[in-house]
Length: 313
Image: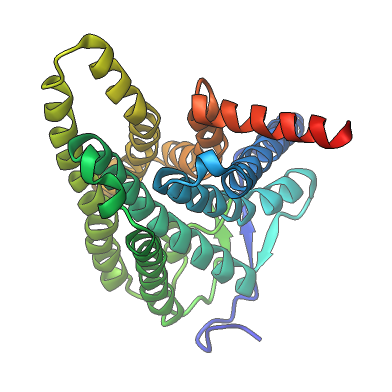
């Protein structure tokens, strides 16, 4: 049964990234590799954060949330995309499309606020180091993480409910590789002005709001770092923020490019690349960014290997 009583469309056809068969096979192998790397990296972070006592800190609590989110973020898109690379008929059911859209909006909104929570954690660690354990207590961390998930849920519920009020009577061809809401709304057989207005204002609240708060937070962080008397101390303080800065720059750069441009500036090929970057590539890069040259994670690996060696002997 369709989720909307107004639609006569039972499935959508996804045009994907390309119609050339040879290129599709290459893309299948590329994105299958990306998906495996993404799943492996994020699962490793979650496991390490759970079993290593040295990673039982607020930063790795939020990082575990981010990894869990990224696993489902990519899993809502990539498996269906991989199937379509090898299929003659690149279709998705109406209900499947709505589900994919719901999950994507939910996790995308939650990620914006998880990244904001991580920025606040770094702010407290650098600007109020003596009060860090008092401020970043377990209750506050759980509240911030839970709030991020709730905000994401509100975001997707509003957009999905409004979308389901629209009639979809044909055509049913989506010029994208998954059911992203702007591309789906283009197929509605009714005025979507309200949906566009809601998308714009929610983009400000969900994207630009957290982004500006992160910028303000890092303004205070940089100011505090510059007050450190030694270059070694400044370098050490900055290194604790470097990974987060890179992730924020990559994620928000792609999302802002996608959602905050005027409608006349949108080009389908550019939109696909931007969406591909923040939905598939960044979740794969996040574990690498947070683990490469990270002494805590390397130390956790060493501890686990040492314990394993001892137990075997």
